[in-house]
Structures are given as C-alpha cells and as structure tokens.
Length: 93
Image 1 (cartoon, rainbow, N blue to C red):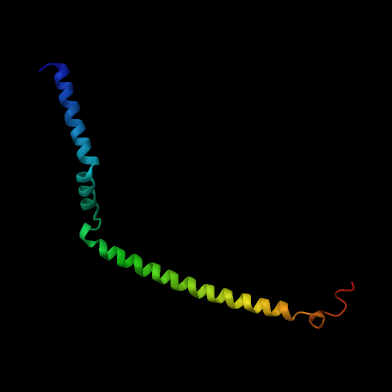
Image 2 (image 1 turned 90 degrees about the vertical axis):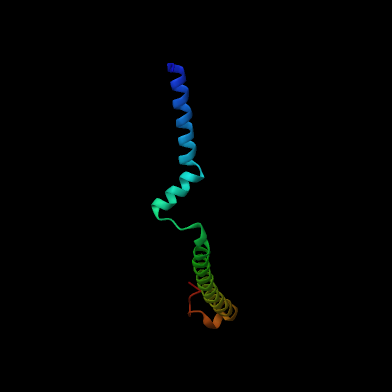
C-alpha cells in the first residue's frame, strides 16, 4: 500500500472513531461510565423537579401574602396620618 492510501485509511478510521465517540453511542457510553441516570428513569427526575417547584411556589405564595399584609398596613397608616399623628413643633422648625 502506498503512503497516500495508508493516510486515507488512517483518516477514514479516525473520522469514524470520532463520529462514534462524539455521537449518540459515545454519549451513551459516557453516561453509563459516569453513573448517569438511565433513560427509563426520567420520570423519577421529573417528579423530584415537580416537588421542588411545588415547594418553591408555596414559599413564594407565603412571601406574597406577607408583602400584601405589610402593604395593607402601610396604606392604612398613611390614610390615617394627619396632624394628630405628628410630633408637636415638627412642622414649624
């Protein structure tokens, strides 16, 4: 075999190896070696994420309720503020 033929064969084998390693077969092997989740266990991950999102939404609702209560209090305080709620001599200085 000539040098050009050997080079062409080497490049073809190298290209096939790169395609396998970086393609779907390579990613499946990497998941298996790395201990990643099985494709059939995706529902477990989805349920965990759903539980986290549900807890976060519940926490945000609680915080929103607290903010609404504080806003109502501030609005009532501002609506009732008049001269009787001011310190004596504060406006005349």
